[in-house]
Image (cartoon, rainbow, N blue to C red; front, side, top):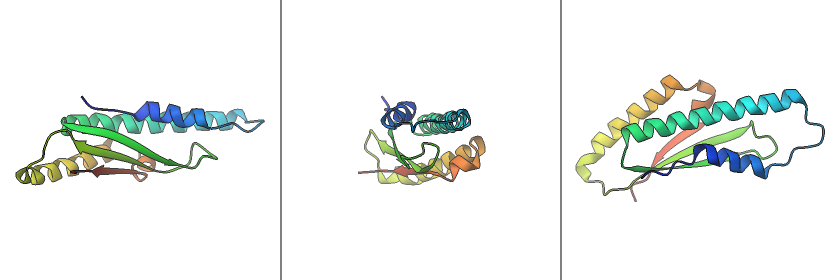
Length: 123
């Protein structure tokens, strides 16, 4: 079973932030749109990883500027195999990794793809 933390991660981050007094409606709308777009990008990434790497665990780590939720530095999506990987499987995994990145860039806006990092851990 895979562990997907995309949306719950954003909810956790949002609840730790405190809003300054007098937040304008436009700022709230921009924050809502940014959260929605980011959650969508995370969900697409998790969907593609599940499709291409069914035996991998998925974890996310968001590096965010806590003053403003809409400005995050990058999102690291970590993939770790749940089964032992043989040396003969490496070439296939690299091909699937490249396919993952191509499909992700086709489905997600560039402003999000440029801030997302996929990493694969074989340890």
